[in-house]
Structures are given as structure tokens and as C-alpha cells.
Image (cartoon, rainbow, N blue to C red; front, side, top):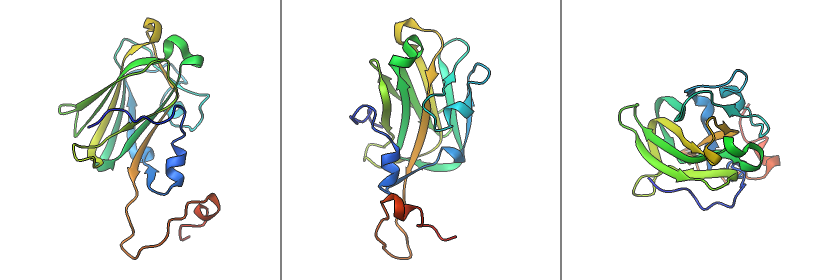
Length: 184
């Protein structure tokens, strides 16, 4: 596994999707949280709205568990954090853990200094290949200004897009083409 990508602050992961090389697979997973305030849970974490957020309600570490029904190839994890809006609720130390179950998780530690935008965490093995996993766990270990509870505005999980075995077709990368790329 590797360290976070040096992606420009605030780079939108939807740009990755538009290239046709990755797709978001968070909807294929079962999401659970260690705690949350009422009305600030998984639905707000996954609603594609940067104005809503998950807010923890308890002692640290605050956990987000993402579990897949089958072993899944994962290339990148994207987390949206905004220090200007959330101040002491903004994570400063995060642990991203990947494995087949709760007992064999491998860890990547991240230090965030007043983050503003998308944080891209590549999930690759020692050969730079995307990992195959059943589970991803995100643990918020500390917040800025010693805050107790945390805010996370969005989390996205991306897998690489496989080449078609039927034949090699050019990738449809413009929005106009992408609207019509699937067979109805």
C-alpha cells in the first residue's frame, strides 16, 4: 500500500470517472458507522452533496466501515474534508485500513493539515496494482484543535474499469457520449 496521492487540493473525483478508467462502487458495499448524530449518518455521507456530512457522536476513534459482499478490486479512496467549514470537527489524523475482515486489516496513516477538498488515497499493493479486498475501514484518530466529534462530507470508492473482451472500442469520454454509452 502507498501514501496519499499528491493530487491538487480540491480535485473532483468525478473527473476520474469522466476519463472512463474508473467507476464509483460505493453503492455495492454495506456501510456502517461507529456512531452518528441523528440525521447525520451514512445517507448524508453518500448523497453527493458537499453541504451535508456525517457527524460522529462518541469517543475516538470514529469509524466508517465499508464491507463488500465479494472480494472487490479497489484502486482509490476519496474523502472530502473542509477545514474552513468544520474547524475543530475536521480530521487531522486518519487511518485507512484494508483487509478481508476486522482481524487482518493493513493500515495507511494520513496526517491532514487544514484540508480543503478531496483527499485521494491510492489503494495499491507493492507492485502498484489495485488491491482486492472485502473491507475498508476509515478511522478518525484525531481532529484539528483537539475536537471530539468529527465531520466527513463525502467518501467515494473507485475500481478500475476493465477492458471489453468483445473488442477494443474507443473510450467515450465526453459527457454527450457517456449519456448514450450503454445498451438499453
